Amino acid sequence: MGEIGFSHELINYKEETDERYLYYPIEYYDEKPVIDDCFDIWSLGCVFHEICTGDKVFNDKLQIIENKLPTLSHSKFDHSLMTIIEEMLQMERKDRPNSKFILKFLVSLIYFCE
Image 1 (cartoon, rainbow, N blue to C red):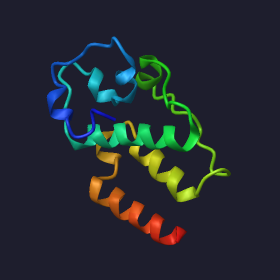
Image 2: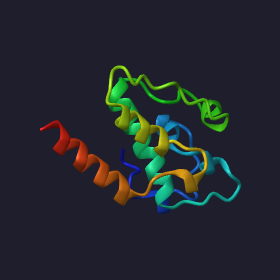
Image 3: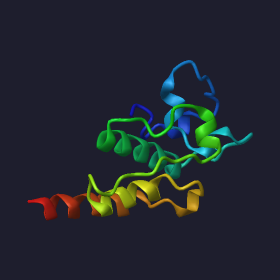
């Protein structure tokens, strides 16, 4: 979670001595990664998934590179919540929602639950 909002500082940081890299998107492993807001959206999707399921999305770098996203159970959680997490974890940066969309979704989810 400490990486959220600081993605621009990660360009030269490729140490994998801890598990932070499990929250980094596929583009992190490119030779010249594009580090932008889409990077943070992926990381936030990993955090949301972990909050909802109690498990990390990925256990190792290979799962990220091979896009081995576990199936999210819609039976335990709101379908729209699981859908937005899946969208946040899209391999293609352009397919991930932007922060404005995610914020509107979260506000509507909170309003709906009241």
